[in-house]
Length: 364
Image (cartoon, rainbow, N blue to C red; front, side, top):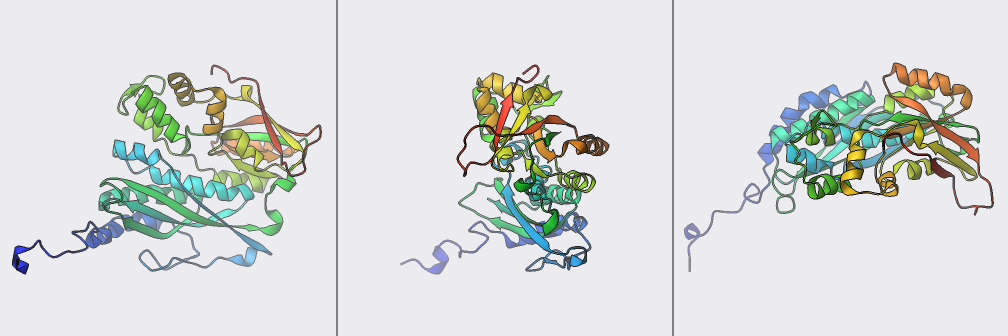
């Protein structure tokens, strides 16, 4: 029989793949970034068991809390392949806060969750730097989060991330489908590219079918393919809140998975049709490249990608000029996308609003 000295070293958490010291080092590296993403309502600092937030409710008569949870999907695979991790956090914040603002809610705070195969403090700090920057752009606080090592489940260098955000809106001011009326106008806000949806198809077409290298220069883009695919998702939260303060906006639609038509349908009441004109804008070159290299049909493109529209505001016709002026002043590309019409014909009562896309995109 072997003696203890002949056996393998004693088991430990570190030997199993979890490094507590690395976790503590990561917290210290990310602390300066997280502390910049704050608000006056935040109590305490990073490192507690729970984030504390004391909302100032005096300006609300009947406050309603809104919450949203999301991730960034397989865009993380591009960040990992490029070994560039400082922008993926911006994508995460955008996906959460821009869902909150659809109902008119002001984002208050966000908490993130990062799962890694092996904790590398510099990598985590870089990710959180992007999250903190995104929170600053959205005007919300980064109220802590969790980083978990999953050795044996995820490979070293691999990670995934998600977040939950909480916002607040006055009940009387809450934006919702019931506010939409026939005659209202659709104002589109341009996307910054693919944003964070459709990356499984984009990667399949560009990396597997077309075999394009991430570090290869693409003339249409003026930079590498990897740089194009990592352009951060535009954060519209403050722009939408400014628009709601200046106009009688009815509701917003965040154009994510499902594309323009399906996301617009989510904010329309029964009995109306949103008529959107493809001829009112030209999708970015990345969409044309994916369609051409993968021979992807238009219907598949439009239900997978935002096609250049990241957010849509639905507002009364008298407010259109003011809305475009507000967005232009805030450096958000915007244009009239279409209008809301009364539906014709018999429709089942359980069916909500519909969306029609007409025309063709210029040069697409």
